[in-house]
Image (cartoon, rainbow, N blue to C red; front, top):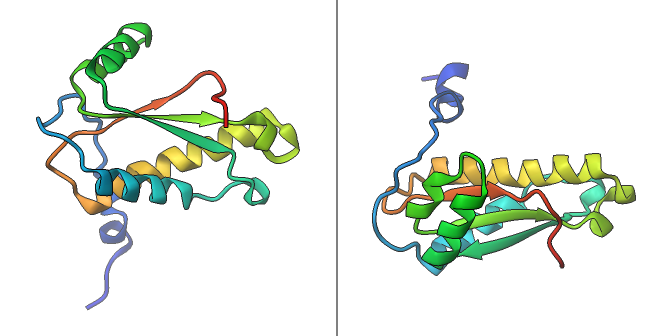
Length: 134
């Protein structure tokens, strides 16, 4: 039996934003798998200029929720992953490449979450506006 294009793209076409998270913690192995998926994203000239910050502290998530427009959902998330870009590591130090590379890492991370169907805990993904140190 063959699979139609719509069936193959079901996980993309069925994507939804999640703003209410299931209670519970996210295991270290799940975080590692998610970050590995993000780091498997393509980047310009294989520079991999992304950096990730994993946040578990409720106080920090709450502070970020207040600071970010439309970020209120972070206050109830069990985990936050900030995707930062290192401009010095980007191809030709170009901001356009950096933004594309970090966006690809973020998208790959989100696809991995959908494909693995982790239902025990919610995930919050934040794209940082400023550079993070290496």
